[in-house]
Image 1 (cartoon, rainbow, N blue to C red):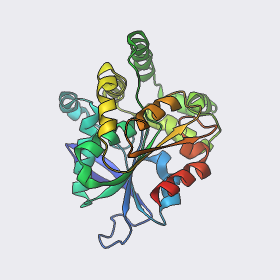
Image 2 (image 1 turned 90 degrees about the vertical axis):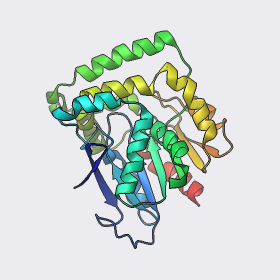
Image 3 (image 1 turned 135 degrees about the vertical axis):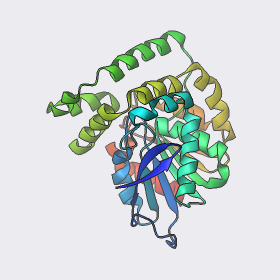
Image 4 (image 1 turned 120 degrees about the horizontal axis):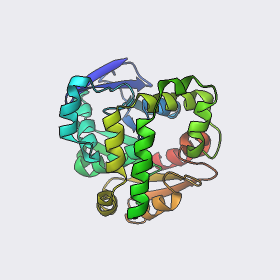
Length: 284
């Protein structure tokens, strides 16, 4: 297990396809994987392993999620810094600097894909190309957003640790996210990550990911992307419906769009063969 301090928080990271630390003389390019809300790098491991013959794959846990925990004496500083997604893009830039990585490709999912969009525009010189999975542009609906915040607040507040010990809990927890079954270990890992997420971070990023500001800013951010980008959607995604991804892709000729049939919010786990086929065609 490896950690590096980034903007006052110890960030967990790992390499797939190469040793930790990575040999600077490695001839393979680097691909960085970014997880979504309340997740961690764990659910990217199988995708990274499948791509490790061509890339040195860097996985990390974003601030406040997974193993990048926020200590009690850091809470005030983190709240002052805030939970805007562009600050997470700044964290990634500092991570690459700390690991001496001058240019990378990006593969990001859900909220992590929103972080990646900011990163692509704030640090275009650091990116070769990008894959955005299950992301898009929401339209503002005041009543729906307020209901989402209220429900999200309940979900974040009520997270008893004993929930992970109930045999069927991971299955029921992941049901809304999936259209096809995924390995049990992946369901268990995601539930564990959700239960371990920092309270203030989990709640704060709900408000910054799905907000009136995001609906106003993100269309322009997608339109500004200047590197080749693939946006992959799950046909039956209930979290970020596929049409929202299509809308985002249509804003920019640099963005290709791919739909993975019969999948939900985790197409890379629900149908890895099709997902990797789209990704490999794009990278080729």
